[in-house]
Image (cartoon, rainbow, N blue to C red; front, side):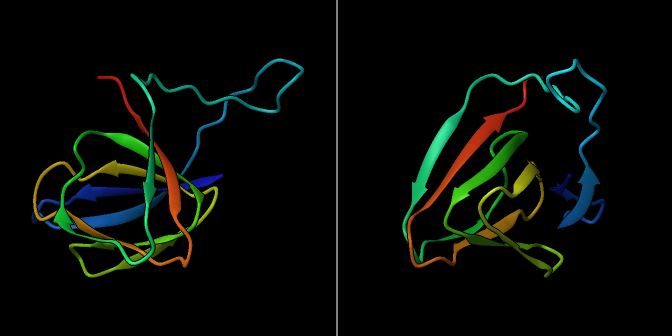
Length: 117
């Protein structure tokens, strides 16, 4: 499984990279397991057409789209679409940040899972 990381480059611009989840062998009930320490979970509902202008991530966090869709534009100009089941690691804590646009005709529901330090 692949997830997308958005991070701040040396030039202060955010950019994307695709990463694989490092599943480890587990018990007989699962094929693989990846564990990350989290502090809590925040569920968010965003209406169609919402645009969050340039902003940085408030903390390192996984953002998983549950329903609806969004487009994220990095400072590099690249745009990525995120739909149900897509995982984003928001890691652009400095610099210009990114733009988030809700592109679906339905409310986008997502869960943000902050990563513990």
